[in-house]
Length: 413
Ligand SMILES: [Zn+2]
Picture 1 (cartoon, protein in one colour):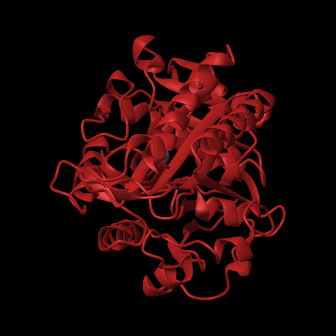
Picture 2: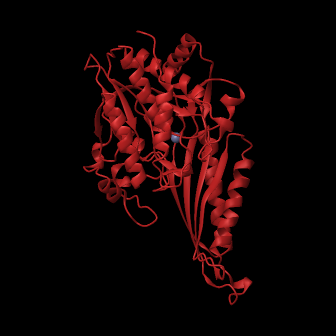
Picture 3: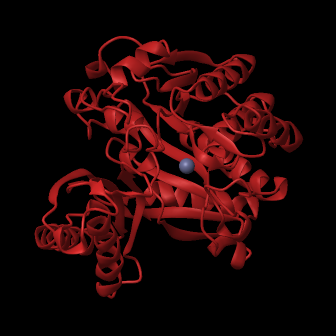
């Protein structure tokens, strides 16, 4: 194979261009699933794939596949990819580096006259972020079969609009049952992503190779108390759903700290009260709680403890509680030989690297269920992510794209 030329300026321009497709005022990036900005972002990425000579298709949930055929059609495909949806008030690198970076990796391979024996597919996953439906990785969950089409059909956003309505409105029709990947359809999956943590930058290391992804889970708690006039309802008679929620949020913190494991984290990231007026006792509260650990048993014990604490709090405060476990996923163990391939590529290219754990979850968590998978992490400034000031420099992105390209070559040649 000829040496690879990565056009990092072009990639940087494309990252900047996609960042302008946002529901918010730039530099803030907000691209919630199937919003107008998400749909325009998808069009932008598809146009780049077309220019790169890739064949496009999409499935019923809106996962997009851009394919470069291999010379031997009987071999399983090697896939790469990530997401372009972005939570409200996000930055321009999360997910995007793995999508636009993969397009640049493929362009570099083509420019070098490389001919893959296996096909290479770029996957742009639907809804990695949980913003619209409270559950993330909808696309990769359906692909891997972890999420059933029946359950996906029950998803509603906060206005009651269903996943079916949203996807069909965006032009993705057909049965969700057809989304699941056939067995052995991919030989490997590699996702390029920013670290979203500070370790690589602090240690001045160019590449992190992910060996394991922490086990994420989400609880949704709906609390119903009794509202009333803030002046007229005296304190002893109150059934304040807001205060019960506040106690639960503190119980989450207490529980995860109490596990004694530095890897256990818990966050009450959604906390809405109704009716939300200064002179009205909160009658309802909605909490969404994220709990993670690298060890499944520790995570599950924390989840159970939080549920018990919430039940006790609500009973004491005479507030009714409905708890749903939106997801409680196991950790993903990445494929040892694929991790070794990426490490060998780093050594060949003279790029500094280390093996690490991903504490954020990614589509790879689910792709690891269907094929050997790993992730290539690059540093980001101060470990900041999900914020408009999220930043990785061209000098940090370039080795990631190079290592991805070389890994794709190694696994498809
Ligand atoms: Zn991401």
